[in-house]
Image 1 (cartoon, one colour):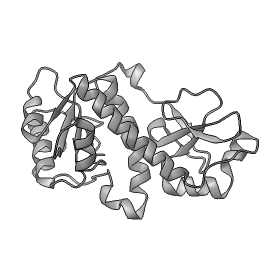
Image 2 (spheres, rainbow, N blue to C red):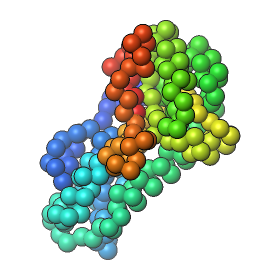
Image 3 (cartoon, rainbow, N blue to C red):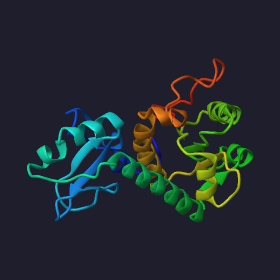
Image 4 (cartoon, rainbow, N blue to C red):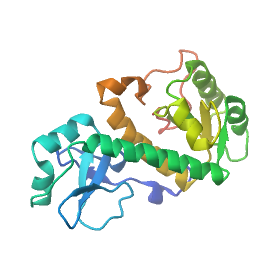
Length: 232
């Protein structure tokens, strides 16, 4: 569990997907609302007025919702949705992640670079979110994971962004590893990273950037302790 907020504040509500009918936590779905002119609009912050229409962050769910007119059915009125809705939401989520990373850097919440990230683990308040470039070497990821375990720490690992994207967001060259200390920004980064993972991970042409790393780094390096040390 990220330590940025209390359990009550950080708990995610569950929502029903308009395409599948499945119920899932909000970090697995994207909220939409209907604009005054009847257009379906993504609401990443969950703050736009109107009834929320929740759709699983998955390419198949997006395709079904568009093909079967699920937005109109859920809204109980005729609405329109752009044909490239999945790509549009993916761009919005990517831009939000990069923006929030930059904001975290300016707030002094970020340590970037392999050595800096490892040293940050020994600080009084260690980082809880770890970014690793999806096109970076696995060796660094494994070593940081092992360092986490040796200190009995846990954290969320995000591998959905490329080296170029991380470098752009953090204003440095060749960023492969970055760590974020506990904060509301850290929580929001994880929230939107999980959504982006669903969209990118469910598209064959983007399998290389799949967030989920279901196997352990190696047999001698078990996961850090904690229920939510999911690898994204």
